[in-house]
Amino acid sequence: MNKLMIDNTVGVDIENINRFKNIALNKKFLSKIYTKKELAYCLNKKNPPQHLAVRYCAKEAVIKACNARNIEINEYNQIEILNKKNGVPYINIIKSGIQHKVNINISLSHCKDIAIAFAIISTKIEVKKEHKDKNKKTKNNKNNKPKNK
Ligand SMILES: CC(C)(COP(=O)(O)OP(=O)(O)OC[C@H]1O[C@@H](n2cnc3c(N)ncnc32)[C@H](O)[C@@H]1OP(=O)(O)O)[C@@H](O)C(=O)NCCC(=O)NCCS
Image 1 (cartoon, rainbow, N blue to C red):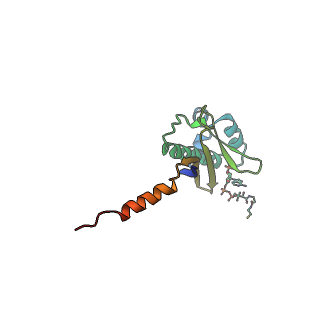
Image 2: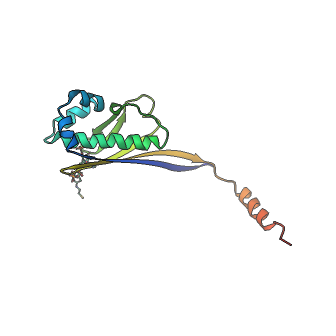
Image 3: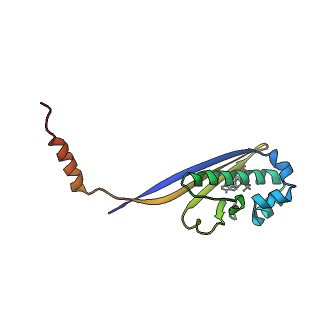
């Protein structure tokens, strides 16, 4: 029987929130980087730059974790960060085909000046289990090695 193992790759990014103060007013940039749902979430918050910054971090972190497995994502707005009712963030990959293949988890945090995000991609891989007899054979072979004269 084959053995199931978990294969993980991670990504991380950190940003200075100050950079996002002007960006929050640049509509062209906003639509290039963020989806409509993300903008609705961030721009309705008391301090939009920290939510924009942390989502930018999350997108970069996802790209890094994806690069580690040769998964190509070409546009920032193909990676959508949404929140569950309890606030827990999750990823929605808009590029067709990818969402079904990988499971991406993220965690976000921001303080006054800094935003940071981690992303982890986990996939189950099947590893062939070696047959017991095969192991025995290998051991025996070791023992049967001709001794050096
Ligand atoms: C979840 C919680 C710990 C976040 O801590 P915080 O210092 O206020 O905020 P941070 O800057 O570190 O993180 C903010 C991000 O956490 C994420 N977040 C929010 N609620 C979350 C939750 N329940 N679980 C995981 N992540 C959460 C969000 O992505 C948020 O950023 P966003 O609004 O831009 O999406 C805090 O909101 C909290 O205490 N929640 C409810 C009570 C609770 O569960 N307390 C723990 C008792 S032991």
